[in-house]
Image 1: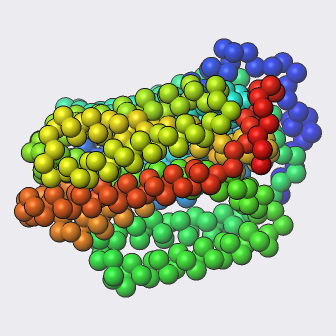
Image 2 (image 1 turned 90 degrees about the horizontal axis):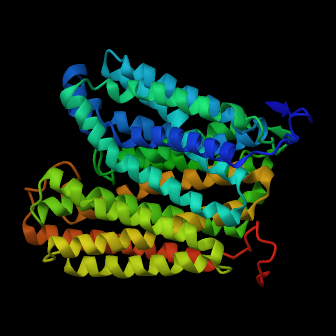
Image 3 (image 1 turned 180 degrees about the vertical axis):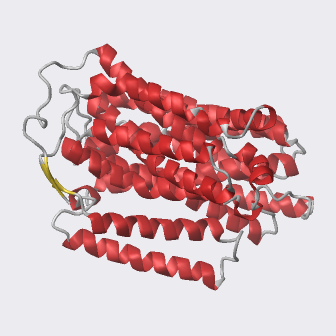
Length: 491
């Protein structure tokens, strides 16, 4: 599919965006991103109610998996489309697809329709994740962009905290469908807020082609890989032929996708972007960091319940330390980056601190008090949170405006893929040491066995952070655009 952008639309409006218009756009895209993030967490408390009322409880995991599959697979595709057609129509399309999925889910008469609705939601939600960061990248220069990354981290934290609370309240006291109905007015408000000011954003590319075959290969390869990561150790043993088959098929299609990138006249993901050492190192560091953080967030409540004896609600409250620490770390990093020429050192120091705290947690896992665990997990979040703004700004600063959407889409894609991989890896460690999967209860294992399992889980998460630190160390450092007086760094 070819698309030639009219030269009149490719030129930025003579009237620059005012500060109020910039703030309106950022508020609107963050609101739309909040919707997509909420729908990753809000359904969990309501799932038993949905299963009871809709039936077919055996398909319940697909309510989460369906959303995750399409959201992850579509993220890099949205980046490319927005570079070609412009941010406004692309983000409008993402919101409308998300709202259509919400409508289907809210009116679902059975489990199958609900799963289809969730998959449609994910197809829109994946674009909202990527486009929010891309639009912010359009509005402010890299040196000022870091502080907005803290807002994005805060949006994720709000979703992590508010999602389960809203989902449980709606399911218990009102009706589970309100989980999806609430998206409709909020999505329309977001569209109204960003409608007029987004018209002033330019379209960066004049002549581009959307590689349909490449997009199809990417979606198929990602879907198969995520199915293997989600089913391995739960639906099927890791050594089963089903998991091996999914991984083998995914590997074949990934190879075909790589071949397509080399041979396509204009590949879906520019080789210039993929070959950029800053993009490679920055996305890899965030991929590994997200794997450690999300994996830890999944198994920390199990640890709090089985080792420290907390209830489910108490363990949820105890998770606030990790989440708020992450937001605080991202906020500190975002505000500090403009003051540093060697800005990546902020993330390097933060990740090193998180590794140290996670190492201590693994050593005391069997006998630590709740206070010690809270202090350590808050410090882990504080340290690891510093990386999100640094990695995002570094990657966006490394590419030109024409490739901003693609680079941000790749970053979002690998961040989502890291989440799935982290849960899968720590799940394999848990099962290997006799610990039941999260959500299955922990009564089957002795305290000593459980303690050893959590020691290895925390140690594995620390190893992921060590690899993220190595990627940061190897990442070249390019002066941030936006401050001409900043010294030029040596290569």
